[in-house]
Image 1: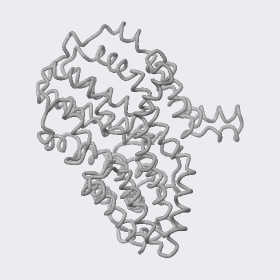
Image 2: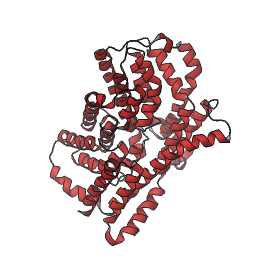
Image 3: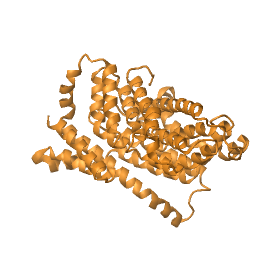
Image 4: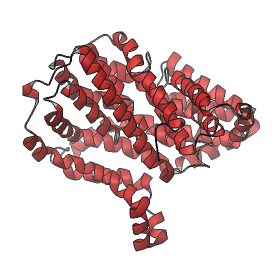
Length: 447
């Protein structure tokens, strides 16, 4: 039982360090890793070192850091502003157009930027002022912006995605090629869900069409911004080259060895970055000093994400050495015969509860391995269990009082964040729980 006890102690340590002591999540994950390793007893130094070295060698670690860098560069290049302008030209004349544009643009940005606060800040800084000029009160604008921030967790390749993929109960069963298409579909379901929620909010709260001053002709916005959509080519090319009929064609042309060398975790961030630099070359920093200033802003983000990822992977390696999967398997046999629906609801409630004080990455590291094994033991297909867990964890953007996107959006809208605690639970947190259950039980299709 030492591995299960170690997992519980690690979760407690992360919560105490991050929530009670108000230290950043990177420090909390270091403490969680050290607490986990301590359960190896006299072998703790050796087990901890082996786990850490293995984590540092993970391609997943590179990919997670690369996507943080890429999303920051794309924001600096102004690509999201161009995409939002196009969406506003298409939707702005309809009732609630600014709210729909905010939701759709958050969904697009979530495919390359996976941190909820970054999504809320980037999209909110553009769309909240537009919503305010569309007969939208500050509370509603902040509600929509914060509620949309959780989509970053459901698209690959966010930190939570990598943490769950590398966990000791998931890695023997799934690899990146198994879950990439699954998570793109799951992420799309979450965009559809939020568009439906936006429709309800628009009708209930009397949001009008956008101000004409904020709507540019579609010909102009497309002419100026169509190239910004090329960043999605960087996502599509590696996926098409490794999966389905196109993947078989590539393998036939370059051979099996060449096809296996196309690693999604390496090539996707590289191609997205190249596309972003090509498209945004005129607005990116010029000169070494300007680039150093940009790197100075990226550095703290990379340090926190890097430490979080390495410590999460290292702790997973230690738990694997301690026999977590076998010990959990024996305990979860008690659920034999329990309906998948009941297990999915229970796992979802646990994840959503933990996501209240923690962010999605820490939540996934803490309870993801247990949740995955519980779901698969109940008969849920592994890819559906993986997707459901990340959908559950995406509720961290809508989990007061600890969700950072709530405070980011409220600050931009200049409202008291407490006033949207109740609405964001009703409009976004509960539906996220419901959709996760629907995915786990097969009601919502994922590949």
